[in-house]
Structures are given as C-alpha cells and as structure tokens.
Image (cartoon, rainbow, N blue to C red):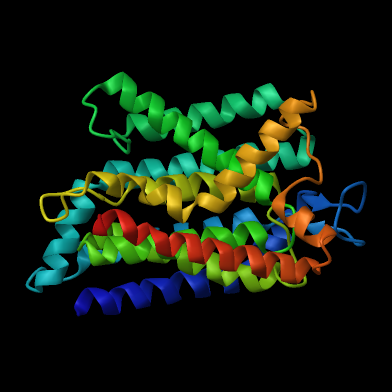
Length: 327
C-alpha cells in the first residue's frame, strides 16, 4: 500500500514540476530562438515556442535529483526506505545514464530545431546516445545470451522509437498523448509485477507528460519540436525496456511482446509511412501528409477528433498487452 501511495505522489510531483516549470522552459526557448514559424505543412498560423521537450525533461530531472537526495537522508528503520536505498544503489549507474543520455538526445533535437542538422549528423547523435544507454546495462536480451546481439537489438529499438515519435509529432497533442498512454501502460505493468523502483520512475515520467499535455492540446501554447519528439521517443524506448516481463513468477515467454502492443500505433504508423515513401521513391526522412492523423482528417474528422481517435486506438491496443500473460 505504501508504494501505491508513492506511485500517486511521484505522478503528481512530475505533473506539477512539468506544469509549473513550463513558463521557465518556454521563456528559455524563446530567448535562445527555439521558435516554430508558420510555413509549408505547418498546422499553426502564429509563431510557437519549441519548449515541450525541455518541459518534460525538467518535470522528470528535477524530481529525480530531489528524490535521490531525499532517499539518502531518510531514516532506514522504515522497511520501504530500506528497499528504496537498495534499489537506488543497485540502479544508480543506469538511472544516471538514462538522465544523461536523455539530456543528450534532447540536445541533439534542440540543435536540429535551431540550426536544422543534416540527417546524417542527427542519426549519428541518436546512435551515440542509444549506444551509451546500452553500455550502462539497460538492454534487451530476448532470451539470447549474447552481448553483441543485446547491443544491436537495444540500439535498433531506441532508434526505431525515436523516429516513430518524431514521425507522430504532426498534430497538437498527438505525440505527447501517445507517450503518456505508453508511460501509463508500462507503469501499471511495473507496479503489478512489484518492480517498485521502475514503477516510480515510470509514473514520474507519466506525470511530467501529463503536466505538459494541456499546454499542447487542443490549442498549443508550445510544440515538442525535434527536441521533444527525440526525447519522448528515447524515454518511451527506455520505459519499455526497464520492466521485467518474464520472471519465475510470470514465466510467459510471449510477454516480451508487450511493448509492441503498448507502442503499436506510433510503430505501425512509422512502418506504413516508410514503406509508402520507399514505394514512391522518396527519402524516408522527408516529411509528408500520409500519416494516420492526416488520413483521418482527410476523411472528415477535425484535427482534435483525429488525435482523440488515435489516442483511443492506442489505449485499446495497449489493453491487448494482457493477452501474452493469459496464453
């Protein structure tokens, strides 16, 4: 019961840190020139700051720093505090690496937002911080006990999620809403499995996303930009890896497919668009209006309704993630 109270507390902490820190991050974005001006294929008519990634990162990093310090000075005669001490000590390096690599991914996006990096440079940055994450021990194994395989699969997964969320950042609230749905899905699973430290971090991340979402939907006060979509893609890739889906208590091999259900919408949209661009002979990294959201709008839905429809679709498919545990 104590940990469920903590889950709610860290969610609210992330929400408040993100929501209240928005003004600071927004002003900083304006000061350094991170502004998205109206133009071709844009969905807005006035300049909008690209402060979403900064806001979500702030909503996660500040509570992590404060919380880690608080845990170290709390009295250890409480059982749950002893568990937190053990968990933080055991995962200190991976947790620090996640924050550093997340900041690095955010910076890659910020530079791209400000100066428009060449695709090769952007990919090199993505690859670097994906490798840094894998080197910290946060890796996918898929029951194959081979270090090279683990590195390759993890890096591929991180790169896929970064670009999937980058592709989905095409309407107000779409990318941030899907990230929130994904984070809540992983948080619920980690809590159900008793993975308390993972669940705390995931619910904190979900709270930070929830704090930003009202700033981004239905009317945007800020956009994610490449910085935000890069960071959110990286974050969801990490949140998908952290929980242990297979254990002696839950010996279900198909459970490793759970992240594919929870993140099905952005992944399938990316696959569809990439294949379509390849068939048309276009570079896969050049944007167009063939995403699911665009097609729903062409069917007659308003942009807000199209986004809400995709959210509902993501929730419905995420609920199917329970199937591997029942098979």
